Structure formats: C-alpha cells, structure tokens
Length: 122
Image (cartoon, rainbow, N blue to C red; front, side, top):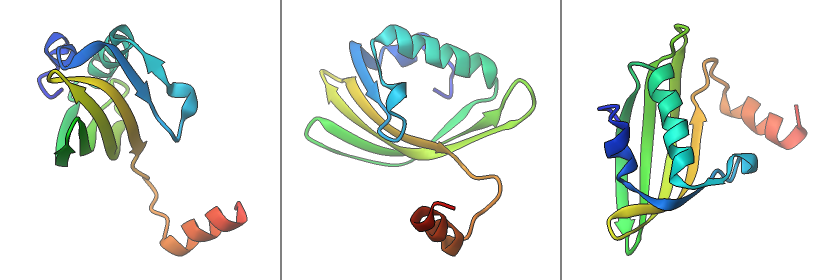
C-alpha cells in the first residue's frame, strides 16, 4: 500500500475476494475488480497515503491486523482512519476480509458523552 503499487497490492488478493464491513452493510462487495477500483481512487485522491500496521496475529487461515491510514486528500483535507481488518488467507492470498476501519474523530468526545449518546440516542 505504501508503495502505491496497485498491481503488487492486487497480487495479494484472490480474484473472487469478498469484502464486508459489518458496521456498514451496504459496502459489501465481491471481486478483485472492485478492489482495483477502490484503491485506484484512494491512491489518486490521497497522493501521500500512508498505511501503518500497528499489530497483527494469525491463527490457521485467519489473520487479524490493526491499521492506521493517513494522508492528505487532493483537496487538502486530512485522511485519518484507524481500525481492524480480519482476513481469510489461503494459498498465500487474501480470500475474504471483514473491515472495521473508521475515521478518527477530529473533535474528541469524552467517554461519558459517548456512553450517554449510545444509551439515550442523543
């Protein structure tokens, strides 16, 4: 990802890759061509895109990884996304992914306010 080498990045995925984002069910998709389309837009729209792998572990054919994605969008605004990705890997390539990636809040919200909002719908 950090090299912005789309072809090398796509080599990490099976052609029938399946992606889901449980917190955003409408973002589910299948196929490597959608991966190509998504990351082409990211690499061109965030020219200095940088991905930091915070930590990772694996068991059998499942890998868990924590990420921080940052950069500056073409319009000058900052991209700052953090989260976890769980992937199924076989034959050395990613076959499926469950992404839990979210924008980092620009305005920090304290825990009391977050709990109140969650429990009371504020």
